[in-house]
Length: 305
Image (cartoon, rainbow, N blue to C red):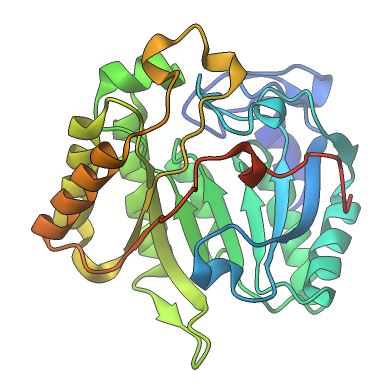
């Protein structure tokens, strides 16, 4: 990607569905809170993704600061709001990708990267020229613009999006995005077009290519969770993996949202799992044991930057 195209995309930013039209080159910020500078909060091996992503050596995860959703219950709220992190150059981002590969990472894992797509594309292109040859994972909340995703075609091997809601009422209340399902379902279709059905490395069962859609079960919202699973199964069948998460943790900033100020009960989570089984979902991941804990949230201490 040329510097001219990057400038065009950042001068009038429509990279995500918010369509803010911010001149990020001039220091303006849109909903994500970020200027044209790349800001990240951590770059390190990460062992808490799905087994086929983390493997035994870890996923080379880069957490980008800022977010186009900023859900009220966000588990990474201190980077989503842009408070944590430091600015890095595009050249430094290229070097980070190569350093993570040298540390033995199974893949490069881009977390909340939507607002930095142009710079990431350039950094990936340069890293691949310099020997980056492990899969690239695009790890997102799912609120994406299809035209922006098309810039990643051929560079991303694994898409790891959320599908948080079907209900526009819930997405408006919790993620300030009444059009979430409309935009996320369009985005998933483009992601699947790019990477297709899952391909695993043998014999280690690491995912080399494909899509895993995550759904975080929220307290009191099992009906919408069932709608999410039904949509995924009816649309994609066994051509994707579905990861049903039980790790929701009520952090201090949700104390004023009474319905979210508790964990998901075992009965609620089991209800969603039983529904997935009745639907016939076979390619999936579930969480067992004590997944809901703040200890699962990494330190955003600018490590590896």
